[in-house]
Structure formats: structure tokens, C-alpha cells
Amino acid sequence: MEKSSYKKLTKVIEIQNQYDPDLRKIISKNNIIALIPIGSIEQHGMHLPISTDSDIVSKISKILAKKYNLMLFPTLRYGCSSEHTPYFNISLQPNTLQKILVDICTSLHKNKIDRIIILNGHYGNKKYIIQLRKKINIKDLEVNICSYWDFMSERMDHGGFVETSLMLATSTKTRMSFAKKGIILNDLHGEKLRLYKKMLTKSFPRITKNGVIGDPSAANVAAGKKIIHEIVKNFNNFIKLQS
Image (cartoon, rainbow, N blue to C red):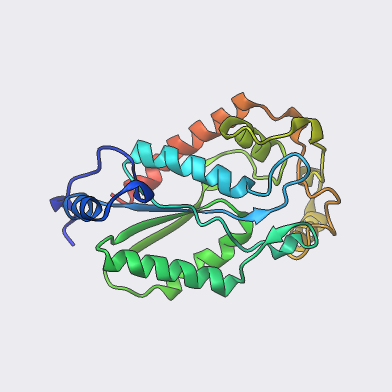
């Protein structure tokens, strides 16, 4: 495909707001890069909603789509979250998540969209979606996979300072009066840190009794906006590779 023969989008296109004839025309005349956000439905302590991962990645994706002329697709709001049981979660099996994404990418290819970015917003999805590169074998279909925290300097947590600040900056769902400190992994070192990280992938309740990793008590809107600004800025180098 000769990418140079296409134009770039001049504004963010959210496909759920489009109509078939118009959408096909846009695809035929523009240099389309599809952006597919992926989140999860799972506990995030007492102060954040179960939609946190999906909410954050949806907001960041919309900002990225506008900044970098991407075609924004609806967020896949379910992920692989069984490690949170018995805390509330709605979890897909890893092969189900992979199959859904393979089907979506294959369908986009049939609709003449051949460049796709999957932006992940839930840590438990990461190792499974990386495997997609081996499962999608379609000539001229380019699928790139990343997580939004790849583009920030803060260490990712779960319901701690980072996620709570991001939610404060992007939604009105945060209940700061319920925010409680969880386990602080930065206080752990060596073999104990390695063991705890491994245990977290199997069972959150064994490690953190309130479902939180980190301390959300100092979270604030300004910090959330600063992190988002950093993500958007650092995404520039990544998107250049897709152009």
C-alpha cells in the first residue's frame, strides 16, 4: 500500500458517530490509523469505580486521537482480571480476549483499514495482547500494541497516586473520602519484591487487603493532568513510527 497517496485526517473521527457512506468515503481518501482502547471491569479499592481502567484509557485515547489524527474506535471495556477474585471483576479468558481482537483487526482489514494501534489500559491484559503479533498473519496489516503507561515516567500503581490522579483529572467518579493506602511496592526490594509481583498476577487479595497498590491520599487533578500531558508528548515518537 502506498501510504503517501493518502491524506491525513484533519480532526478526530469517532466511528460510532459516523454513517456508512460517509465513513467509507473517509477511509478511501485518508491515511487511516485506527486506535482501539482496551480496559477492564474490576475493583479499584473503595474510592475508584470498577470502570477505572476503561475510563482512563478511553479519555487518553480521545486526546491522542485528536492530537495525532487517529480514527478512534469504541473501547473494549472487558479484559483479563481474574486475579482480583473474590473482589469484583468481569473477566475474559485470555484466548477470548485474543480472539476478539484478532476478529476486530481482521474485520478492519476487510474494511480497508490496514494500520491499527491497540492502546491498553489494564496491566493484566498486557502479556496476552502482546501475543497477538503471532496470531495475526495478514499481509499488509500492521498492528502495533502499547500501554499508556509506556509513555509516562511515573511507576504505574493500582488505585494509588497515579491512577487516582488520572481519574481526578478525567472524571467525576472519584470518592477521595474513601481513599485508603494500600501496599507500597516501592518499600520492597530484591526477592521479596519479585515474589510479591508474581503473587499479584495470581491473587490480589493475598497481597493487598483493600485492593489498592500505592497511596492515593495525595492524588490531585494537577498531577493527573501533568501525567496525561507527558503521555501525549511521549506518544509522538511512537506515532512517528506508524506514519
